[in-house]
Image (cartoon, rainbow, N blue to C red; front, side):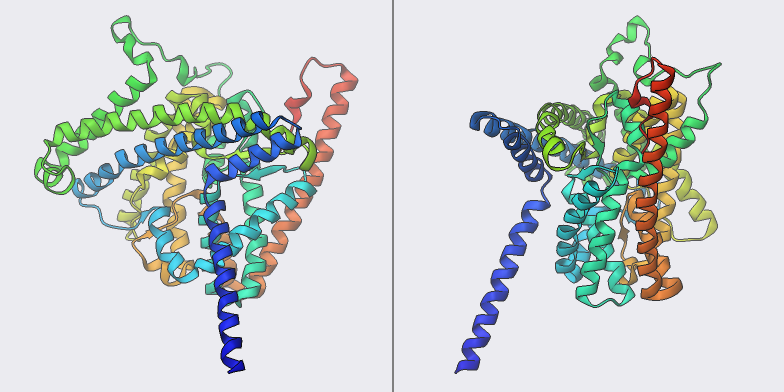
Length: 489
């Protein structure tokens, strides 16, 4: 009887723990909730009135929900395009899509993923407190995807559950602290500010693409900004970004639709609606989604940046919020479209190379190319104008096409699925951790993480010293340049 009661108590405790974990997961996977909490804490720390705290927190949450709604509209508009493209050109292979693979992963590694995600956020805050890389990663859903990938690779390595969670959390916290730092100098240039950071796992591909774009910069023949594109008076309506995006996407949709044919589209995608009407409406929906995203971005930036000052001043000094990719789109809307199209072109070229080489074919994931290509376009335009925007976007497209190919072998049985993780940071982290395990098992994997931590703090120390020397030199020479010009990340 006592044993039965004991078993019932244990089961009740397990249900309680699982219930609490489920609630925490539901909260921290939602970026809108996270940024609203951050806004609330930041305003409270600044001693704002109850009215201001409530108003600021709710406006931040609503702004992020508007942004998310816009992203949802864009995704909905792009989904049929991927199906049309595959059918029109008879392409079969692996489609990188985070949302598709996460469902498969959570069936096996849901608990481990949740715990790595939660404790990884704590590690992120600790690393921000103890280094110069003061970025608080607020894009919860993509951080959760990273945690799930880490859970997969570390399970394949054979760690027991406790070790997996501890080591995985250390890896997760490090990755989401480094990711914004990689591209902060480009963010500062594109936005002409230094109060927000990029919190999206595209950073590695964005970094490579933008660096290549920067190499094309010419002082003798500088390329103008994408935002300075001039149209003849008869085409003056193209100065409206919403109109330009709608028309550009309509042309692309119609061309692919003609190759796919009316029968496929009207029977499989449009529910009988005329195929030309269907794709034109999807193109307009895409433009509407971008319009909504830009509106949400402005609301969030107006609220989160002032609120974050409380955290920056009182909790993590000089910290910056790392926010999702669409936060950058308002800096150069034309560059978003150009970068996206260039990135998708890079994905197609990469796919053709794989087909010719006889490897697994990675089909361009349209949403990944829009998000990562858009950010790369914005940052590359800030460095090298239109030319840089096109080149940077194209290079990013190649990067996020070939990295998933390298990632597949280290994901165990998950790697045999028809989908995989889509963004560059997943690929880079997966290659480092996965192939460390392949080469030397658990020991080498732990050593790799230890080396990354040593490099992290060494970089922090070295960059701080270099910056201090620059600032001293600036003060000595009484230069007119701003000290912020010498901030190194």
